[in-house]
Length: 118
View 1 (cartoon, rainbow, N blue to C red):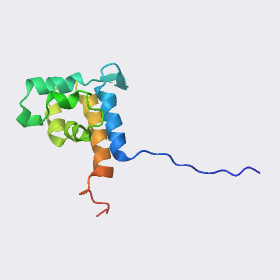
View 2: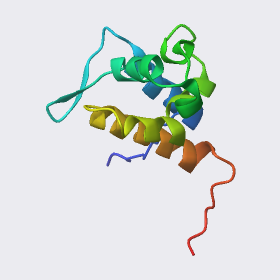
View 3: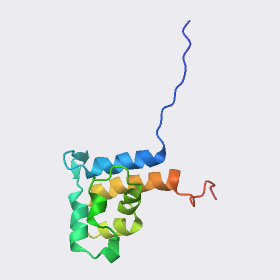
View 4: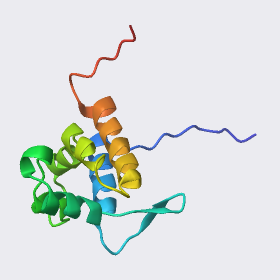
């Protein structure tokens, strides 16, 4: 009789976040949630039309030149960026995508996140 072995394969959370960020930033790839497209152009609109003091982003953080930039993952999914996106029409899908990224950071990377339930 054949013995079955259970194998788990996973990546560390930093590399997972970087993969999610890079997938978003590549212009040649298109992603959809339902029938709506997730577009990085909304982040460029945010940078071009609102003060950096509101969102804290610069153009270099939404260009995939540095493929291993974890700091960019943290910045593009920050609470300030998500709040600023609330005011932009058509930003719902990118907000969902960035909230997914933010959730991974909070759950697996952020040291101040509590592991106990009150």
